[in-house]
Image (cartoon, rainbow, N blue to C red; front, side, top):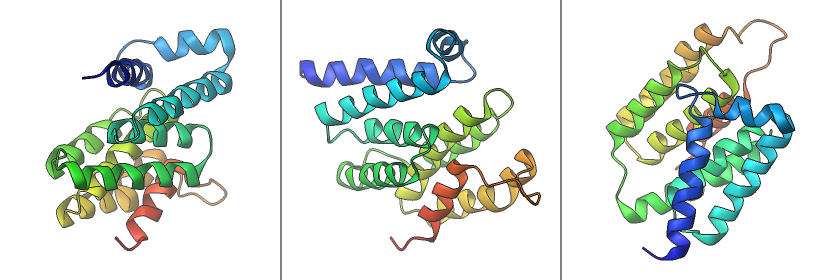
Length: 176
């Protein structure tokens, strides 16, 4: 592992730890000083730097996609998730069941910070879709169409669909 890869790995792990809604309150503490929007913007800039330093790192692209969702950039999220999928098809490192289970586990964490949990869920869902598995795609589709609307109650008139779900819905409807 080169120094560049180690730096990207360390920064990526820190970003992931901050976005893990079940482990501590690191994001909340950091946000109290700078505000949520500024903190998310800085994390996205760090994730963008990680992608520039290690452009073939699929995980870095998934993290960047999640941060694009959190900063209201659907096109950036889609581009990051698609790039990650292309990289994973070349590496054969992702397992369809693991990706689907990660999405399902993450959707159960929506009790705390829904926005962060949904962005992380979207990254896992994109990973599951990117495996090309019909089973994983079907499971993610069911989450988008049935499970998450009931859990989040966004299907009422006047309440918009969360960006994370809209992004994954677009991935599901795009030809592979």
